[in-house]
Image 1 (tube, one colour):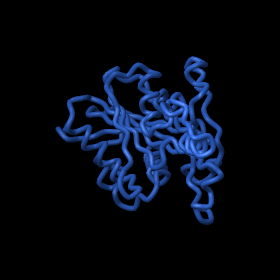
Image 2 (image 1 turned 90 degrees about the vertical axis):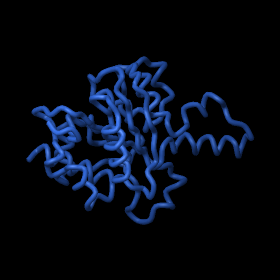
Image 3 (image 1 turned 120 degrees about the vertical axis):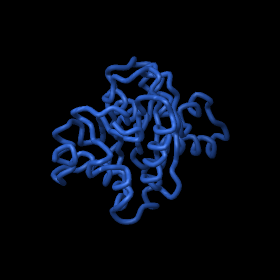
Length: 230
C-alpha cells in the first residue's frame, strides 16, 4: 500500500425518487430521474423529537452518513454544499422582513454547518467536522480539499458528504430553463486501506481523473456508480 494512496471504501446516496441501490444504478444509466421534490428520508432510526424540525438537506445528510456506518467514533466529516440550509434561511429572512424578529431556535438549525453538526450528534461521532462551500461552485475543489485534509491527518478514515436541497419556489426564476438544481445527497468514506469494495486512485475515478470533465455533483456520482458496476 502506497503512503499517499487513497481509497473510496463505500458510498451511499439519497434523493427523491431514487432511494435504493438498484434505483441508483438505473439512475446512473439514465433509466430513472431524480424528482424535484421536498420529500425527505424518514430517519426512523432517530428519535421523533430530534428529527421533527429538520430540513430536507439535514435529513438527507443524516441518512447518507447512517448508510456509511459503522465508522470509528473519532471519524471526521467533511460536508460540502453549494446552497446549505436554503429553505430555513428563506424562512428566517421572511420572518425578519415581516415580523422584524428571528426565533433563536430557528436560527440554530439554519446555519450552513447544521447538517454536518446534526449528523455528528445523531451518531455520536467525536471526530469533528468541516463545512465548506468551494469557490466557483466547484465540486472538484471540494474533492481536492477532502483528499488534502485526509492525507494531512492521521485518521484512517474520513467521511465526505455532499448535499443540497430543493430550491424554494420563490427562487425558481433565478435558474433559467431546465437548469433547476436537484435535491441530492451522497457520501463516501475515504480510507488508507484497500478492500474488496474499494475504488483505488489507480482506477478510472481517481481524484486526478475526476478533475477532468466533472461539472456537477451528479456527474461525479454517476461516474462513481458506473465504476462500481464495471
